[in-house]
Amino acid sequence: MSEKPDVRNLVLENGLSYPSEAELIMLIVGCGTKSVPIEKLAEQAVKVILKTNPPELVSELQKIKGIGQTKALTIAAALELGRRMNRTPQAILKKPRDVLPYVRQYAMQPTEHMVSVSLNGMREVISIRVLSVGSGNTAVLRPREIFSEPLKERASAIVLCHNHPSGLCLPSEQDVATTTALYKAALLVGVALLDHLIITKNSYFSFLEHGLLPPDEADDSMSYEEL
Image (tube, rainbow, N blue to C red; front, top):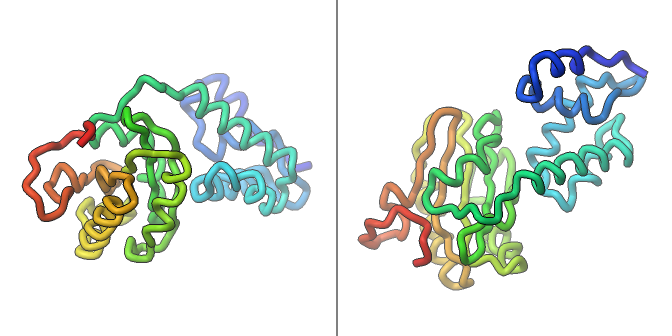
């Protein structure tokens, strides 16, 4: 077994807010293997977590050399416990800024992540789903890929979100065109597209707040209240 770095003592001295995501994984799994040091294993696990939805997480983690079923289940269980303990059913997403705490981790990533946040009629979060990673083009997303799972969940609305690794928090012409097309598709399937957020490390852009949703309509509303 590879020697475990002294992350535990650093956390005991500085608290659980101190370690990075990879170091938290190191604490959870405990050790690497003879051929895969714990640092490398943890970094790969973080990458998989950020691009994988919960139902596929255990199987995707097991594809990493050095992570077997036990380690994969341990990581997935820790993430699920965190989700359950931090779930606030009474919290209602009333405006674009309310979404940011749920997607903040994607703003820090070096590749583009497109994420969908499903909401019920009370505007409570049902699920957060990664739709694509690293495409760099929202046009590759098809309505069926976006709305199939929200329909199964009986969601009444979704908010789309993607990060701009460049740090420029403005939509491209393709972002605007694709969002307009998806808004119209949402009307047909009966799941409202409330907003599309572009996020960076320091800022965000809301299509709703900038008058781009609903498209081609005069609407001064900047909230997610039932329309």
